[in-house]
Length: 161
Image 1 (cartoon, rainbow, N blue to C red):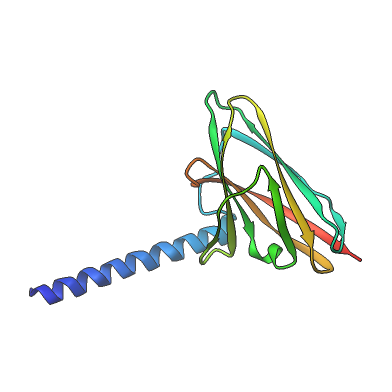
Image 2 (tube, one colour):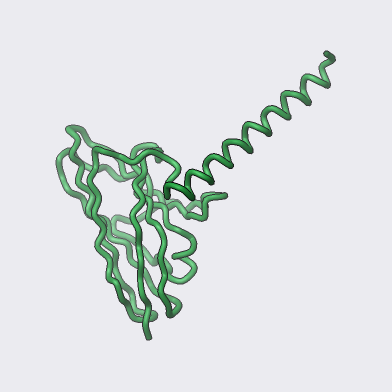
C-alpha cells in the first residue's frame, strides 16, 4: 500500500473509534445516568427544598462522607442542562472553579478539586435562583478523583410565584 492509503485508512479507523466512544458514552448516560462507575468510598446525601419561590435564592446541600482511610478529591459536580435552563446556579460553598460544558451529554461540569478528609463528612452548598415557574428535574453527578467515579443524584424542584 502506498503512504496516502495508509494515512486515509488510519484516519478512518480513528474516526470510527471516536464516534463509537461518543455513542457508547451517550447511551451509557441515557441508560444509567452517568458515564462512569459509582464510587463506593464516599456516601452522598442531598437535601433540597421541594418547592421554592420564583427569583428567590435557595440552597441545595450535599453531605459527602468519606468512609475511606485516605483522603479523596471532589473533582466536579455536573448539573443537568435541562434543570439549568430554568434554575440558575448562582454560587457554591466551597466555590467552584472552571465551568465546562460536557458535549453530547447535556450536562455542565463545575470543577472543585476539593479535598475530602478521611473518615469525615464534608458539606457542599449549591446556591440556585429559580428563573421560571414550573416543575423542573434533572440529575446532579458528584464526581471524585479524576472525574471517572461519579454518582448521579436526582434533583426535582417546583417553582411557584
